[in-house]
Length: 95
Image (cartoon, rainbow, N blue to C red; front, side, top):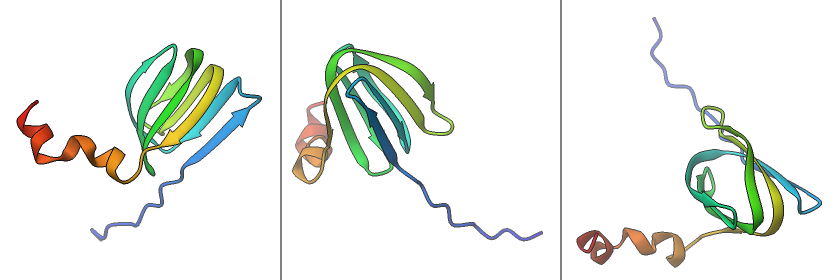
């Protein structure tokens, strides 16, 4: 039996339709959500989606797919200092 590890390419894709519906792939974890904000971890890093009347249409954690409907105002990936802010030693001490 061959026990070689295969390289897996993780694909991330975002499709925005008329600011009313967004479909994304590459979802690792849905961290939090409410009608105005979704916070999630993706293959490309933390992602924040803001809007109003936001609702989950479809969620598939196994395949990493998510569909959201509502009025979408922004999609922002957190990079650099923002995404590492909670990983500092002081943040860990004061949890």
